[in-house]
Image (tube, rainbow, N blue to C red; front, side, top):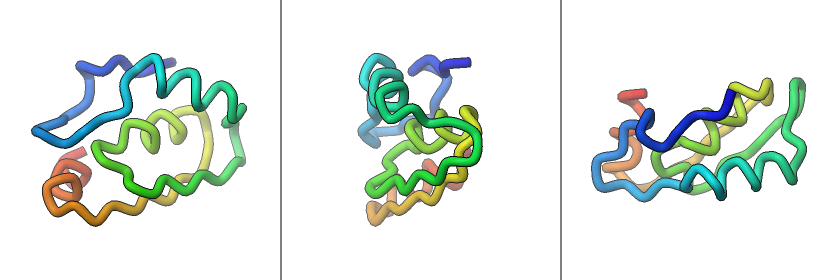
Length: 73
């Protein structure tokens, strides 16, 4: 269920690493029906993982390169 780091498209865009992503979403107890706002989405690793857990996700990113990475997902 948890996505490994090497499964994400990155380019040079920073990404929340696996351990931090898992711990953060587990502590937030993200589950089906939740709504998560991901400000500074970067590669979208938090957004994508939260979506896999059943949350509705709204992602915001201002960095053009990061937006291009997100579009490729």
